[in-house]
Length: 411
Image 1 (cartoon, helix red, strand yellow):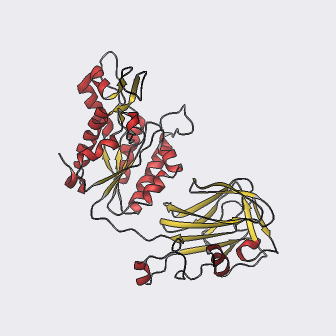
Image 2 (spheres, rainbow, N blue to C red):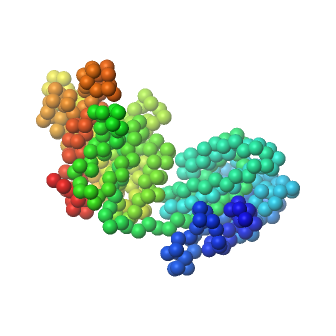
Image 3 (cartoon, one colour):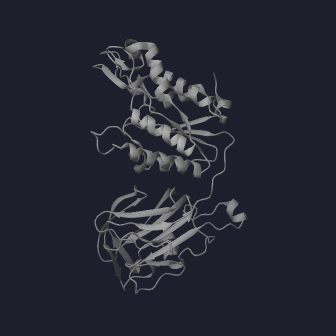
């Protein structure tokens, strides 16, 4: 019997039923032995006058969200339900909706979500956004094609939001299953959530490097550095692209997450990533909350300084002062650990002076490196030497905090 038919005929009512090894509903041996059945919620979508599959809750075109039910649509103005008498089980009815979200109240944690979609009569295009993250890319389905799409999501705010994308998308059923809590490892992992200043670069881009790339040099090999930093991302786009979600779904208790943003948040001339300070603070709160829910340790890093100085005094200016202040305020308000890399990097630049900092930043002459045959003058990104020096400054700041990181420090 196929997995989809099990979903249709049995509704996955018994969490410990025999399922394939690849099934997202597989229960670990530890959980089976403890007889602990995972939290699971099942929803059957269709008209109010159609029957509901056993052990599922009915979602209709009139199911407006309420705290009492704990689920429903945020707005039912654009919700349409269809019943198809020729079909069986989950396939016999569906709902299509747009400009609204299906909301489900859930305890904070990590979940697997399985969504059944399709129409026996018409072709459709179907995709899913969960928590504003495109979890299922838009996929064309021909008439009669019923598909089951699975994804994992970290719930931070006590509620899962599911939006449909594509041309006239249709949804037949949803099954939401709580994933087991993870156990702390013997040695922690340090995750880096940041932008191009911290990114790990490929060898063919030598000598460009990021501080996250160099950070392992300052800690022994028992400490794992998982660098998720990537260029061009602000606190907002790092979230909406699911990059924070990826970290949260891997994070174990007592792991660390280093959070440095501000460079791309401040780019008001690039609207797709620009994040005003007020919104930036809300995203920082989300990052901190998500990490703490999973018993991790968030550490805010103020944005590293650029090569920006007063031409008369040759003293370096404070880069992104509004975002630096925002991080300091969040650190104080939420009692979050913070390393002021913005200040320590600026003080380091002042020691070197404008000319000396050319070797820190990506200032390379024509014909020196194959990656930059015409040379490069970049006052934001680092050469390997500079990235190493910034990593040194950061590591010195990290070991001064009251955490276990000091136990792994090499110098």
